[in-house]
Image: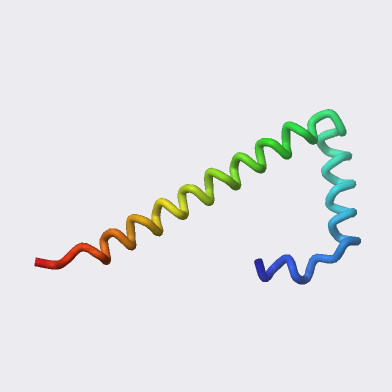
Length: 62
């Protein structure tokens, strides 16, 4: 991901502190789990679309 190249460790610490202040320490596991699930579902959706495109390209045209 090219946009992560400009984010340094100091910026990540600031974001983490802000998230902890907003949501609290008790909610962090829930937020992390939901974020991970969302990323997995997004990747699955993207790969499904790629497979559909490949299948459509491989079909012989009549």
